[in-house]
Image 1 (cartoon, rainbow, N blue to C red):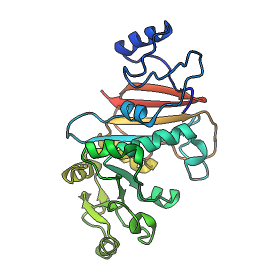
Image 2: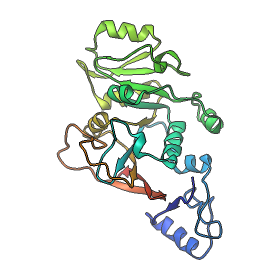
Image 3: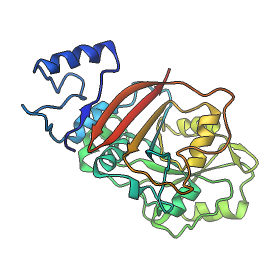
Image 4: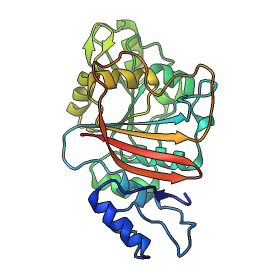
Length: 281
């Protein structure tokens, strides 16, 4: 990842650091964010350890749910039904880092079908960090589905390092639940009828010891999470592209009575892409 800089200071502390950087006193080890100048203006590639430090979860056992999405300048979360065309290598490095830190990745069933989701893989770069945190070799993928309309012959269910989870309501079709369990998936019941309640899903995963949570959407699931008031952190990549068309926003579905205000935690840039991280106030 090259030319990745903090765009502007977001706290009094980082404002002081920025002043030091302007005077040529860059200290990349201070916060993990300003691994910037190599004497010139080009910057250097950040290590995965530096990214992991920057995106570390808050300490403690309280569940923390962050989202990671990408959006074009005109608000499209996808192009031709997929997010990859509006992404970039730096976005994928951050994507991999966020996965490398998570206990579980929540994803909607429609996104599993459209994006061809596979099991999360173990990555040597995060092995020591995960072991020290008491985590398994890779995060579990937790598919949110009320109907369990899923293909259980896919690698997501047949080849995971850790069992794939299915978060569903108590009214899910019993035959599909049996098929899922036969395929090796673990069922987490959270909600009423076939409807999954995001707050109950967070509690259910926490009861399994999965408190560092990441959701990668899709837009419908993220919209439900936002409406339920359980999103703690929003990581969004702003892609310097225009897509037009009728693509979804990063969140869709039920609205909230009053828009929720988040606090800017960090803002990075590379090749015109902005990597924003907001936290609840």
